[in-house]
Length: 77
Image (cartoon, rainbow, N blue to C red; front, side):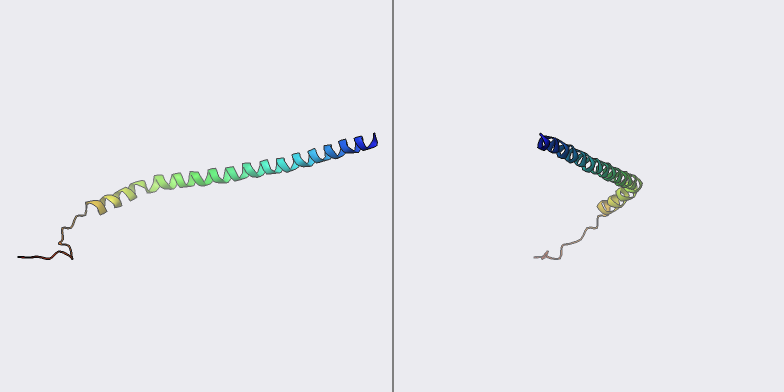
């Protein structure tokens, strides 16, 4: 009967240590999630600030048409 009581005590001790470990892991997960959320918000605000400038640069590049004869073109006549 003494061994049964020891087994229960060890099991309770194990469960309490397991809950401590899971609790600290839960806190770590919440901390990581908060950091990631902050980084995503920073990226979104950066995207909003730079969107118009990037679109203007792309339009300049796309609309800047310079007709040229290709270097490999051979005139035969």
